[in-house]
Amino acid sequence: MLRRVRLYSLSTCPTCKKVKEFLKSHSIEAEIIEVDTLESGEQWLAIKELRKINPQETFPTLVVEKAVVGLDEENLKKILDIKNDNDS
Amino acid sequence: MTMTPEKLFEILDKYAKTKGLQLNKDKSLVFELLQGLLKNEERYGYRSCPCRLASGDKQKDADIICPCIYSVDDIREYGRCYCGLYVTKEYNEGKIEKRVVPERRKK
Image (cartoon, rainbow over all chains, first blue to last red; front, side, top):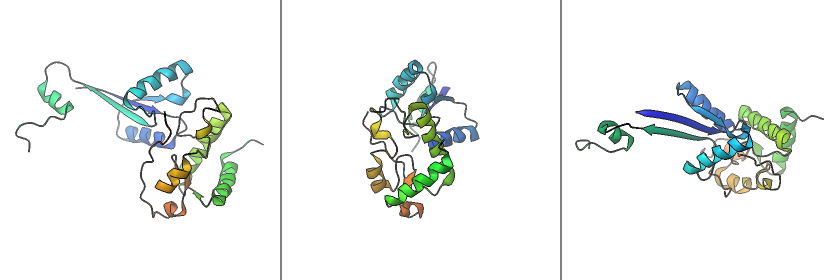
């Protein structure tokens, strides 16, 4: 399973800082996007992307993208939270 | 006079008391927030909330200039404001359950 982790964050926000520390302490590789420090064009793009998943555009927002390539039913079930028939 | 987090702390501590509030007893959180406020004042010219993205347009961001207009309702409902700078006495005494404050600002 492919996975990409992105954190939409503000450089001035202590809560964002705590989420960054959480990712670090769990050795999670993530793209940290400090939206307030981006140049206006980049900031516009980042907000447009953030809004797709979090219409309120609040921070921090952690986005985890997963992908399953091909007909990999086990991972398809996992990623789609589909229980196996024998699971209770 | 350049404003420092320490000076700003003194000022806002007094201000909070005039409102019957307190600053969060978590000093490290408070000083991070104060640094955020001063950074926003430096780059935008106004103390925009450190936990919200400022537009750079003071008029557009009038509602999120600290103390933000949402803090009254947030403090009444959650015992703290959105970013956690201003809190009630009961919040600092641990009598109020700590919950994430949802964003009231309309997009």
